[in-house]
Length: 125
Image 1: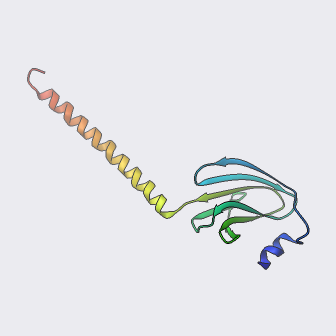
Image 2: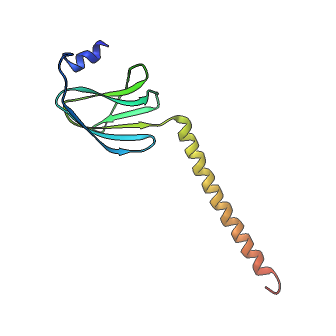
Image 3: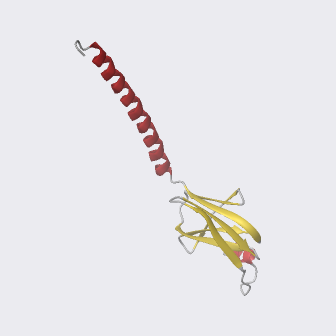
């Protein structure tokens, strides 16, 4: 990968770095990375086209590393790196779940309204 070697510089030079996890959930992680030279940040997750990455708020293309892992190129200095996993099927299931919850809520309101309407019209009640 000559383009990565050009990005990193001489192989014998090593960057000093510090990484702090700011936020982590099932499909999202935000890291603060301080480095004294351009570097590659490797996230130990399987690479998939559904991964999105940003560095300092700007969308960047994730790089496939080590055959199946995800990484991004970062500049020298302090960087906030965010990885988000948005598989299309997962997004569709979330939408379906939201619609189902609305339907259940409305159905519950209709059933409760009908129940109280009938209770009013029962003689002796």
